[in-house]
Amino acid sequence: MLPHELPPDWSAAREELREATARAGWKPDLVADAEIALLELFVNAWRHGGSSAPLVVIALLDRVLRVSVSDGNPLLPVERDDPDLYAVTGRGLCLVRSLTHRSGAEPRKSGKSCWFELDAAA
Image (tube, rainbow, N blue to C red; front, top):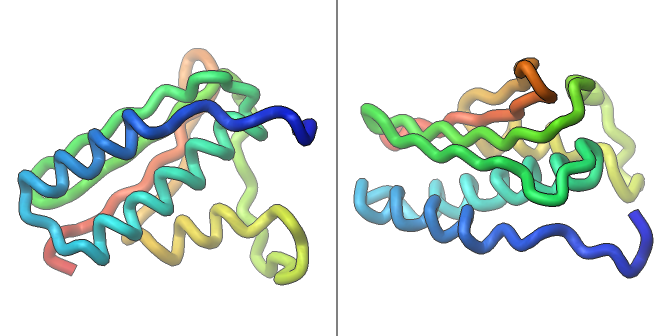
């Protein structure tokens, strides 16, 4: 990433997430966790996946929020077991894992989809 390059606008995805969780009566702390995890996956899709407009799908079914962010890069992410606490990058997937109940990545016909799930009753 060059210093002048900015990530794409994620405000529409964030607003959709907020609206879905507000309608379902989710607690603010869980919504905040979901927003941070969404931002991390969104920026990763842009920075590492090369997507100028990552595809975001937000689904809320049976009190489970599932968020997936897709890009065109078929290379699945590798989470570091022991990320360097002083490194500028490399801790994002650990952060997503610590904020959510389930997370992962799956190949798609064209690229990959990284996702997480949060349970409302947690």
